[in-house]
Image (tube, rainbow, N blue to C red; front, side):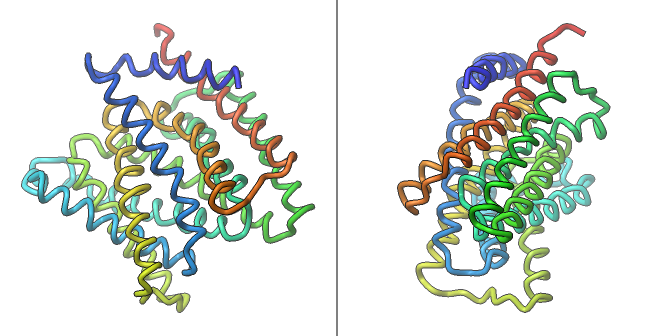
Amino acid sequence: MVQSIRGMGHLQNGLRIVEEGQELKVILLLILSVTMVSSASILIRYSASHPLAIVFWRTLYGSIVMALIGLFRGDTGKVKESQAVSNWPWLVLIGVVLSLHFSTWFTSLFLTTVAASVVLVNTSPIFTAIFSTIVLGESLRRKSWAGVVIAVAGAVLLAWNDLMTVGAGALLGDLLALSGALFLAIYFIGGRRFAKGIPITVYTTIVYLTAAVVTLVVCLALQINVLIFNPTEVLIFLALAIFPTALGHSVNNYLLTLVPAYVVSSAVIAEPVGATLLAVVFLGEIPTAFTFLGFAIILIGVSLVLVDIAREREEPS
């Protein structure tokens, strides 16, 4: 916990690169995005639809919402002047990655507990740090590698507990959540690299629509019903599109144009806590002592990586 508090202090220092007077704006947007994204797991669990059908409708409605906002703001007229034209293949690829992230994570929520699924999918900063060494040529220091090892140990403990207490289905759910974390890390890095110079409504519309199309193709291939018009389900899909998508993921994408990816990724430390509390209140899902232990170990490992990365950014080159 102390490590997490220190981490937030160092991440505040990461905001120094933001234009003067923008720090409060970034902090408020981070709080908004975490709050909104935390609601996703509860909304998904309330749905009676197939996980991939939920992904399709969430991303389709999300793309429509962002397109409407873009039209209202006049962003569509800026497309030709932006990087969207030259970067469109990369935006499509990022959309495919988003589909993979949602598909693996949504499925995991129906196989394991909300607490386990959310904390595992939010190990994405670990993957972000590792990929940064590969893609961006940034080297990880010893403390970062220690954080990776600690987080992995926590994930193993969590998975072992689920296997012993719930069964193989929960273990599969844990593995899918980790896969979701992997794809989320790629999604964040891609956004940091290619979202700049593109109106955020244009960027998210392209990415979400691509994710919807890819997911639809998979649903058709697997004969998964996507023609869902039940009023309750439609309300859930719309809520997913507005709250965790438009006010969560889209805000994160906008933040990636303002601050480094590690600052945005750091916000995920708060999401598992919020999602777990919501699961207790709305689903009556109380984590076991071992789940809490694995939960804490993972967050300590993630915090250690984020603190070390933040310190490295602060040091003069």
